[in-house]
Amino acid sequence: MKQMESPPLSLLSLLSLLSLLSVLLAILLHFPLPSTAIPFTCNTSKTPTCQSLIGYIPTNKTTYSSLKFLFTIKSIRTLFSANNLSPSTRSSTSIPAGSTVRIPISCSCSAGSGYSSGRPIYVVKAGDGLDSIARNIFGGFVTYQEIAKANNISDPNLIEAGKRLLIPMPCSCDPVDGDSVVHYAHFVAAGSTVSSIAESFGVSQNVLLRINGIKDPKDLQAGQVLDVPLRACSSSISNSSLDHNLRIPNSSYALTAKNCVLCSCSSTTWQLECRPTQGIGNNSCPAAKCGSLFIGNSSVSACGTSTCSYAGYNAGSIFTSLNNHSTCNGTNGSGPGPGSPEKNGCSSRLRVGWMIQTPVMLLFVVLVFFGLLCNEIS
Image (cartoon, rainbow, N blue to C red; front, side, top):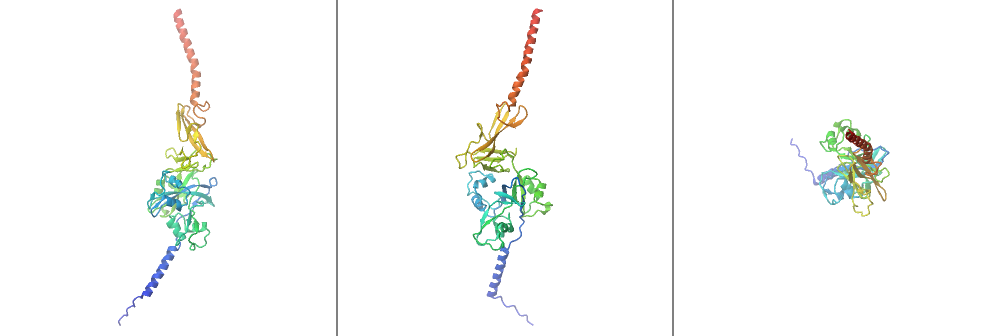
């Protein structure tokens, strides 16, 4: 018996099939997929707020101005300083796709986790879904669940165009092993290992595993967001200063004291090095000096060196401290500096030395005189 051939697919049936496939595809693209981002541990009570960093990787070519807008950064100079760029860099400077840009994040600790404080704010566009916002726009540093929770959204699939969303980026303010650090959110690329990441950022592999709750280095996954603690420079900033929480890692700087002072981190001494800026966009900076010595400068004397260091600021003043390094008596200290009898070990030694040497010299002269006299008598 001759087998009957199947009738050709009608145009109407084909259109129906294509329509069904498009609906299924739209559902798959809009349906939230699991993400590997997890909140960072943040339990500190001494410093509940701080500055953290995000290693953002744009998928398309962009500019610093666009990133300032996307992450709701108040001053573009903050973005420049985090990436060690000159304050005079043009905001329209191009950023290639796939490059890493350090995004400064104001961090706040709450209930054992750290999230960005009040920023960034994203305005929903037509066709946006929470998962696409988390993955495609903010680089996978946040999950759709976290966005929904931060904005009290009960159904992630029902968001309206024009709605303003708080994007809770991961961060932390916790010290690590008693040291102040700057927490950096790092997106793990394919092929990365814990050892290679630890080496590239100059951190201990064991510390990296511990603070991220990873028991086995083999458990590291591509797309995971790691908390990398970057070593921060120590400073002389007073606890009463408005910027007492200032933490700066290597390869970056910060404009502080209302843009009147620029501070950077020395990778050799790991001390904060600050200098006056003469006021970037501000011509009314208060004096930043120790007497006649500007901050960041040193004076050299026979007794050692004295350096004027930045110690913070308040509404109308810049604080300084004079740090003395003495080579006369082997001690270091802070005080009035060269010329002061209380701190100048060099001048004290000269006085003591003269007091000891004078009687000896007089005795020597007397003995010589009596020797000559005896020779004349004999």
